[in-house]
Image (cartoon, rainbow, N blue to C red; front, side, top):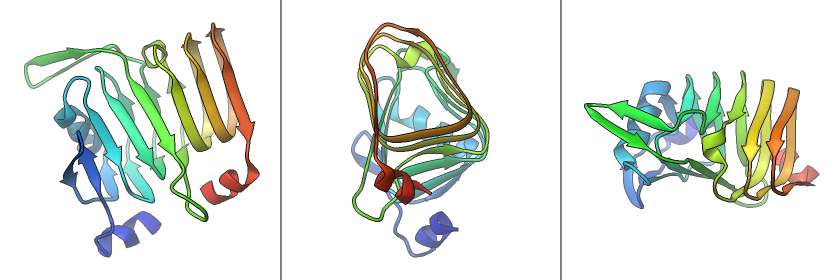
Length: 183
């Protein structure tokens, strides 16, 4: 409801490679996917919304960067780097995927939240990952093969949490104030 209210008040901003490309806070899974495709290979999608709500799956794949300056909330599974290549519209993009979550300030939520699962696949792991916020999944959170640094300032909540094949620092700094802002 907060995302819908912000959208009604024209307080939403999404940037594709630094240029305004959408003014929504509530997106379908296919609209979100279209924005990721629009930024192109090694492009950056920046969500400058306090809360961005996606009514479907989120699949960060094919060499994309996602910057969240607030909270990204999804109805379904969030996959980050589970798939290396992405074919769409007769083109194929391949590459590693990166996600950054920034805390927009006091009393504003930040994080990655879903009613389903969050999966960090092996193609999300070849650069540093930095997050400030709450990582929450109503189901499970999976991390596979993190060979670079992973830093989370906030907290992780999920029904099940699994780490597989860790080769680098995995740092979680508990910050209850950030967690409370996220919920």
